[in-house]
Image (cartoon, rainbow, N blue to C red; front, side, top):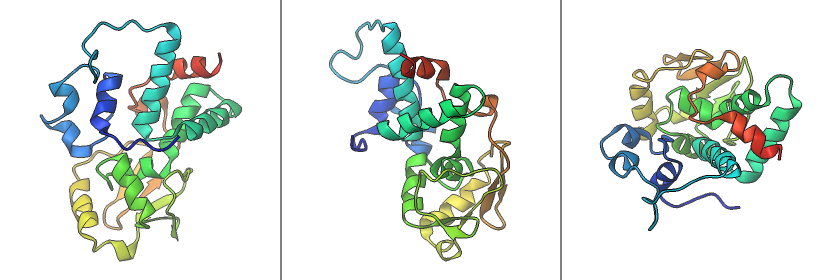
Length: 208
């Protein structure tokens, strides 16, 4: 399945929660879900009753859209989470949080995960000193993510670095704005992940 290219605001409205897909716009009064808090489409304001399967499906879709992951990718992440020791749902969220595009976003070096993916594909970031242009690259504890030196003078990068100071960095990451870099200290605990999903429903979806 190809990546979704339509209005991302429709995705938030469909899931009924803010997925923060448009960066700064999500925090303004222009946010679509604040202005029209119902599902898109002709019957969006009608009553809707979800079955147990429907609830599980919606949680899976919500997580996919929150992190910007394709269906096949998401399924492979679930399989990896199931193989790891521990709670499968938490393992899944830790894997998703470890993606390079998410780490760049969490460090404040991009306004949204979508923008982080674009910047990574254009080669603006390195991991442990090596250029990485794959947004799905999985970081691990000890990895250092940095803006490449030749990218520091790019207009948009400069804007993001200037505004990064106002962005809070989660405890599992460390940021050093003097070197335009950040470090993955450890894997995040569940209470440090703000994804608006009930991961147990996702586990139930794949356990059918």
